[in-house]
Length: 219
Image (cartoon, rainbow, N blue to C red; front, side, top):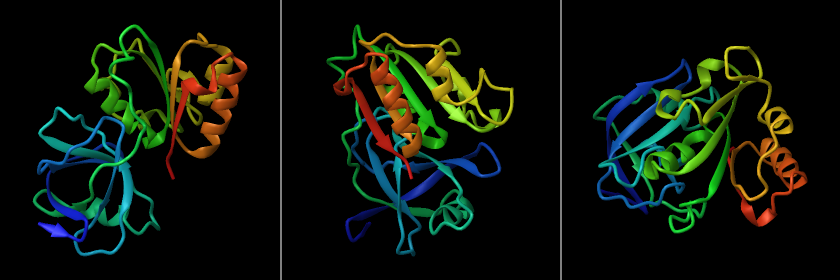
């Protein structure tokens, strides 16, 4: 069913992760995407949509997004109220924040996320299970280390700024300052723009070429 350039997808599952964060699972309806791409999602009878990196993988027969409610937002409070069998509108996937599967073997990857910016990395890691990665996840509280059991515990680092219950107390920038990386690492950053600017500067000072740093800003 079409709505302008959007398709209507039925919600087939919902996982509540925290009071404000949840995963919506929708029928895929043949939607094609590459791990790391994003879609626009909104309620079926509304005029507003929001961009979300796809949380699931191209190999799944469903499509998932990770959503954090913004209390005064135009979309997320409505999405939070939706239930299984309700519908959402989704446009075709777009974007170039992706891993070159021809380059991945033998390369070392650093993934740096803040908050729900972990979404594309969840898709990367599930799509390429043999990828050699370290994932730094910057959150305020340890409960915001969303579905951390999905990741290899030796490769995932929750950097918590408000409590000491994560793997590292402090921001991802603090972790990188204390744990420099190999300059040949391919670095992917996804989250708020301040984090991206700060991490970009740290990585360049550690010898990483700008051509090996890829960014996706979450608003």
